[in-house]
Image (tube, rainbow, N blue to C red; front, top):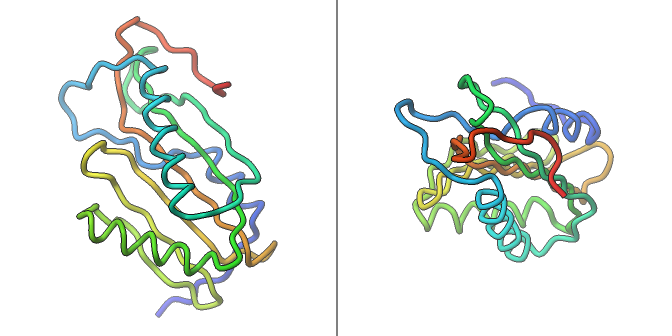
Length: 165
């Protein structure tokens, strides 16, 4: 069995800021949705998750990112979170139980040998992809989360990619 090592928190934060959380589409036509609407919907879902986790958020970043499809009108919304919890592994375990009970597609669930839990899943109602990780050298109290929408096509014809206010 492969040994998983705890990784530095900075490496994870930088890594998740440069990557998405699974906005791949299954092909075919993309749903049309304005970026502001998609951002509002994902932000509300992430706010509810933060309440469920009962974490203290240190940093929250929101971005509009390009999808793999061609075009300046195809995008996904990404939110990255760094938060603190006295028992981050237990908080992620409770979230796993909630997602499992709600029939989410759990795409990653593992316990690291050196401590920490990795959990990722997709909400069947929205298609939003979520990932939660703990077990960092920088501090055992950290939870890092990444959250993303599926890809959408903005009906206005173009998207302003980059950070959201």
